[in-house]
Image 1 (spheres, protein in one colour):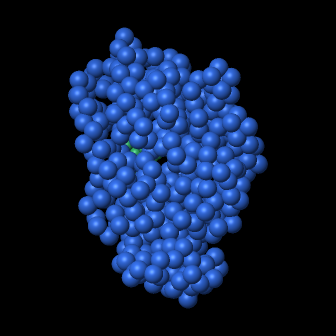
Image 2 (cartoon, helix red, strand yellow):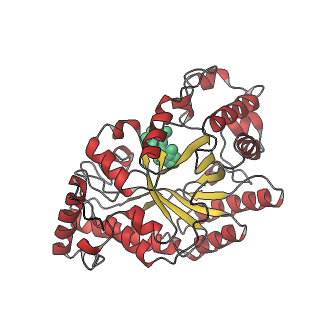
Image 3 (cartoon, rainbow, N blue to C red):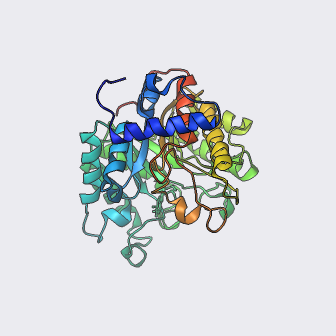
Length: 377
Ligand code: 9MR
């Protein structure tokens, strides 16, 4: 560890760790906090894995938090700044200012940067619905991909090219979600998007990013089978795809280490694809306000899930969807009951590490090492 005076965040961490040691939560702490490397970034890097977080422009104005991000993260991804709603004020224009500011922050702090997301049916600009139709959708999608990927060419660790294209509940035999992209272009919109991204930046790692692949239930299993069929088909036909992003927005109470998910990850690995945990956070279904109990449950799930995932050598990065409960999309969407705060991330609202921080650290410490395939673009 370095011998420089502790930064405020470093001090907070030590105080937080000492408090937790006193509480004895989980029993998964460093033997001595003072001897341990101080960042999840370092613990992950020792095993050839990247650790990082989603970031937003607003968060970077919070100085203690942005310093925590720079200390803890080896990779960052814009939570919203590279979505169509942010990038496309009009059909004719692009606004890269927010994305560029986040890239500068990542670059300045020696973090890799990933892109999220080129094709999704959500976070579209207002003009989209009035303007895009079956005649022009293909060209508009391809232009968007080409311009955006070119803008960041050579700077990206990876791109989420298509996001959340499957929804079993929509009832199609192929499992695809019914979206404007599917309706206007047809199922081939996915491979078209990958080809366009590859053409615009031939060195970028191209990712298919999906949610709800993790649970041990029938719907998730159908989704896994549908996604696997697409990935297998793309590999066979040399569609340029390099990785699967499994988002990992999970519940503390859900089994996310089941045999079907395990087999799926083995099959994805066997296709020669890299695996990324792209958006991890953990909700709980507890309606009580006993934070100690809930934190232990959530920390245990962080440990169990990441220990399981890190067994796969194809896994090269773990990103959480934010680092602190101060800024989490789940504040709106994730409470089990009114007035019950959410605790989904490794730092609480006061930027103190929760037991989840140590659970993540321990999962990295116990993980088998790997060559950092995908560690850089
Ligand atoms: O966290 C994001 C939230 O701030 C946005 O309002 C929302 C819509 O753009 O997207 C959230 O992030 C989502 C991500 O882009 C894709 N996977 C699910 C994430 C949580 O909803």
